[in-house]
Length: 244
Length: 274
Image (cartoon, rainbow over all chains, first blue to last red; front, side, top):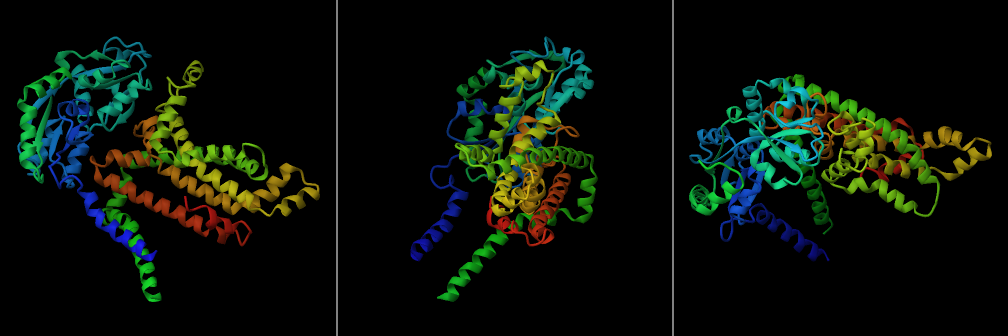
């Protein structure tokens, strides 16, 4: 009895390091930290890697704290560039672009037909926090449109773009600024109202190999694949991303 | 042999204490007293505490006001289906808060079960402090109700019968006999529920969202400030540790204040473990 317990205890302790780095042993499985807006398209491009999707700002923080990522894909250049300056990632490359839209529930409870209606109507608006890329871009759009007063209609500031989409899809909010590519996966519940081209911010996605990666060769190959592989490029385009 | 066994026990305690204390020590290690004060002076921290205290005060009033009589009923009556009712009341204990958030949205949200009725009355709950109160009440109430049932059950039945035979009405018996006798246990349950409510995160961010000064509670503020202003996040965390620690201490010392009533035993026997 005691022997069993002792064996169990030893086994448990022996297993802990395995838990901590379960993936590194055999064929290297890449760990990719990617912006939440890439949630649908990256697994379609390659199912094999382990993905962590979140706000680019949170991912950058995690990488700074030593998270075991091989690749970082950011929805705003600044987060990748900051890490590059700190020598935590290799040189970032731009692999896609995006546009912002105003997402509204299909039921359109606030009766919105254009982004300018936000000024007139009483609207429950959901945006990203100032720090997450989608939130920063949203503020830029509102500045470009001369509509920063609309910020007073914000009922919630969300930590990443998918949380905004969720609140719209559930019909809780009347409108939210998201990327064009976020509407496609929930198009039976959510509709996109376009934002004029002249008010669009430059949304560029950058990708970089993380300096502390143990699979650098594989990680570099993956980054090249996203940048060059025709199938990967086609899937990005199909999802609504711009290629540049 | 006996020594070896003792050594194992002591080692286990040491491991447990170290593992549980380290993250808490780390928070204070990082903050320092001056930065703690500065961080707590920030608008975000102040607003977060204001929202949290207000919503939790309302939630606690609801939990005590409804939970106490409900628990008394369940503790003193036996009827078919009682176990089922108790299980339902305890269910939120084992639900992940994210599930609670989804449930609240689909019950009280605009497209939820009661959405149309609430809309017709001109009531919207999502993104308001009412939503925060709902989330806190849903997640925290079982901690109180469970303890309250146990406390009422542990009252010596002859006391209640004596009260009745001496001519007190059932209501008067409840107020003058049952409540004071169960007081220690009820207080402990309320404290645990309050501590759980102050830290509520998952259901709140899903159902109420997060907006500074309106629905942003201390927990959602910590989450959102984490990468913007680490100081503020750390300061709020440290303050929350102190508040929760004070609550826990109050629970532990409550039996001392209320004297050696019969209910004090149930405090350690039944509560705290959840």
